Image (tube, rainbow, N blue to C red; front, side, top):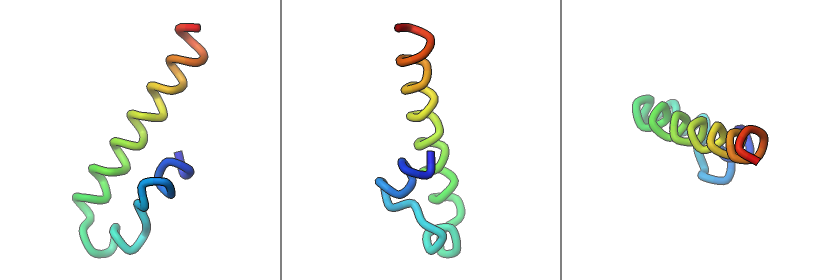
Length: 44
């Protein structure tokens, strides 16, 4: 997940400036990571 956050430029600066947007973006990264895991490990 840290790689996804870095890819989408979700940084500590955003967390300091706009916490709600940071949370939204981190949740999106988490959901994307979960989908990848499900697709690769569970459904294949």
